[in-house]
Each structure stands twice: as structure tokens, then as C-alpha cells.
Length: 212
Image (cartoon, rainbow, N blue to C red):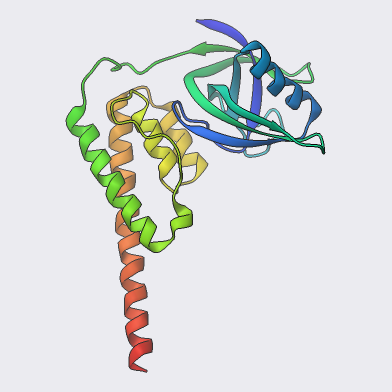
């Protein structure tokens, strides 16, 4: 289905089923946030590594709904948003205060396939990863929804892993749930291995200091 959407360029990837906190300071986007709350307005959120350069935006984004909007006396605000379905931009219109675009929505090709075994594997690895992170640096933990029974589970897992926005965006482009779950599994395996290696190095250094 094609639709024209107002777009929020942001410096992070909003995953379907995930949540982000945004600081709003531009009047046009603050007004758009108010419309989202008051009119239940559908708005698209797209990743940009340079939010001041409107032509430098990702071609795939997701619809976001406001969970909470808090306005401050300095005419800025904080908005917590939750991601919904993905879309692909087909045509951009920059002749407005707010960036707009024609978009088409899309789903995974294997949306109705049951991947319970793979989901369980990823869930177990995520718990292991979070336990290690809690020991290494609790500040690295990312609070947010994780629902294994949800179709959005693979996206939510990527919100929990400390990887770059480019790595997260790669998952947004995938059109197969299985491929994305395998992507999560492989990322978790790599991150767990790296964290364990760092922990072992720290233990060795501590042992050397104790001997000296």
C-alpha cells in the first residue's frame, strides 16, 4: 500500500516493536510530535547519520507511535516512541518545513512460518549475553521490550545488542524472518565471545597486579 508520510530523520534506527527516546528542539518537529499525540497521526522515522542533511536518509524506516511526550519550559521536549511496521521510501518531497515522502509498506516473505527452535536459541543466547554484560558494564544494558512470542522479536533483540546503527539497519532491510533471526544469533555469538575474551584479559591483568 502506497501512502504519503511526514518523516522524522533521526540518528538511530527505530525497530518495529522497539522503543527510542528523542529530544525535540526544532519547532516544526515539536509541532509534529504534538499532532502525533493529539490526532493519532502516522509518522515515519528514518535513520540519518547527518540529521541536518535531509537528502542523506535511509530508504527504509518504520512508523512510530508516541508512548510519552514531555514538554519543557525551554520549548524543547522528550518523546518516547514505539516502532510499528516498516516502509520503503519511493519518492522524497523536500519542499516543506517537514520532510515528506511517498512510501510503500512491506512485510517478511516468511511471516507465517514457525521458527520456534531458532527463536528459543536466540532467546537463550540473549539471556547469556545480558548476564555477561551485567558483569562487565551494567550501563551497556538496553532497557526495552523483548517478547519471544511476538513477530517483532528479532527486531527487539537487535535493540538489546551493543552494535552500530549500520548493523541494526542491515536487519531492517531483510525480508525474511529466518534470515534476521540467524543474523541475531550470529551477532550474539560474536558479542558473547568478545566479552568473554575481555573478561579473561581483565582477570589475567588482575592476577598479575596481585602477584606484583
